[in-house]
Image (tube, rainbow, N blue to C red; front, side, top):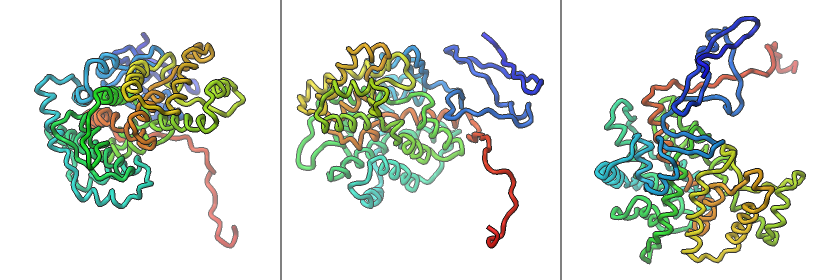
Length: 428
């Protein structure tokens, strides 16, 4: 492998080192570019060819359909670990033993209480407010109730901040749902597991017991694991760049939530259900819409199929398809929307057009189906994504601060007006 790159500009040659990652990914290190060349920069809209950091958290190879957290294959983690174990792995670098996991869970439960005054903030939102806006605002509000900054050089301070947000965030998620559905707020049950408690906080009716369905618990556990981290995507990069200014953890997470909200990022599974609703309103003919998807002159776009990163297959989709089938079977949900989804799935898996182009159903397609079957409103889908992504955001923020990375400060190429003489108002 090459160990340096040579850039020639105006007859002058400049050498830059090439760094190699543990999976043999190579990158040209251009941090000295401006200094060496007297101001020359690169331009890379969307940063598609620019590495913003070196990270030991997640490895993603879209061409080969590989996703690993801290070296562990996503297939093994989804099959053999639970969400809290994976959260610990991402944040602290190793899978926990029994005592470490028990302490982590107990410390999270001890920090799960949210100040009663936060409810007053929640009361200020109308029921029609989008849950992502509510979640972002409440996460920011936690800063007021936890005003001291985290000493990132203190392992104890960092740990306390982590268990605090891991304890309080699911409460805010549940409150965002219950605000939307008009249910009284719930703190859950400390006798339950982390994921089981999330379900209880979300769905328990005020006048009835809540019975946990192991199939639903398993499906949600897997979904949260599959969404826990995904390398340097839009929201993760946002968390890191906000945190690089030494903004606190809650502020950085709130910024990540807002980045995730966009339909091109975390809103993809919501877009899937909106598409299915539109197909239903038009009669539910899946063959018609698959034909429209293949027609390049038709503006219709099939949501939830293929992936901009995974060029072969989305390894997460293979895992969650089984869970989706189990949930639909166990709950016995009769829903024309889900029938349309299953019809589209079968069409795509068997149509040569989609098979040849590897346009398989992705994780957003199946997660939307599962959340719909569980009774989660479509507006909450991205909130559930944020709940899963929480440990990844924390891990990335922690790594960035511990590595003492410099403040993010992208460059630009100016294309505006040159210097102009000022005109008095009467002369304009």
